[in-house]
Length: 401
Ligand SMILES: Cc1cc2nc3c(=O)[nH]c(=O)nc-3n(C[C@H](O)[C@H](O)[C@H](O)COP(=O)(O)O)c2cc1C
Image (cartoon, rainbow, N blue to C red; front, side):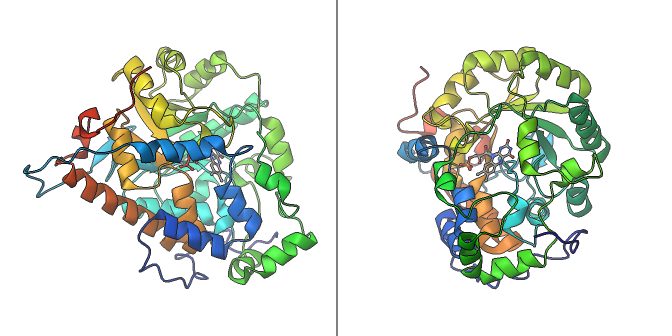
């Protein structure tokens, strides 16, 4: 799984994908196609979540419970979705969430570059995770500078050096993930002997690779699993165990203040779910926060983010930009979150299903599907501008506790 091909940007979308996307109506369809194209353990890596996956399911279920009011006889001949997110123009209130290792899903290890290109084509921001297989510089070679996500690491010199690279590359925002003091447990992956990162050749894994020849061949002849944001800082390649070992569980607000001093542009805290923490985010000088439980990948059995959003919005008002992720699979979900005060949403799995199904074309399709749903639904609730969404468009908005 190592090699040097594609060390430069891929020229086009995912060549190995011959999947016709014409009949894809929703993200669920892309999920099915990703399941059919990826080795089982990789599909489980993106689809699964912490422990028994209660929170991942709740994120979806609580969004699904909300119902719209249907207002009619309003002029919805022109519906606009455009907005700004952290100072960046966005053609709809959506950005791509950071997802580590997702480069492996497509393009022979170039998945993040393909997703960044698709985001640029759709006119929405892309967030590159520090644990991506593509470096900041890789992404900047094919798309505008991304938002860059980091965790606080034990080696503060390494943190400072990465921040410096993100600054030099012109990243408009630094996203500090607060929900990852250490790695949680994913029962689905523990159950599967084929799962290991970097991939190992064990018999079960071989069976899974053999069952998915298109993905396996493109990966075999691809550029290999390397953590290029880390490799930029020393000669010897980093492995995932070492990187996870860098997560600093002793991180506190003082470290956020330190990072605030270091980083000149927008600072975003991803994983702020309680009003008290949201207040702290404002006082430490953050420009934005993401109500996020890491898609249910870390603390299982915590509340769905859509239920936490109204109290956070109430606490901070307009002092700081509030975004939300967790369970967003449709334009309808985005409209619900915007109605409850989110400036916009991030998607993790929704774009990964597209990437796993058909590379760049799959992410383009995912964004297209979501935009279409958002456009139609915004008009049908009687709004000409998505920014006018408020709890009034919901029949049963959650009450602020
Ligand atoms: C496979 C996978 C990898 C992820 N890796 C990261 C990461 O490296 N950094 C991070 O802050 N969040 C990471 N996340 C969490 C996402 O940024 C986001 O919070 C979550 O996916 C949102 O939920 P959704 O998948 O239901 O949209 C990851 C999520 C998934 C599914």
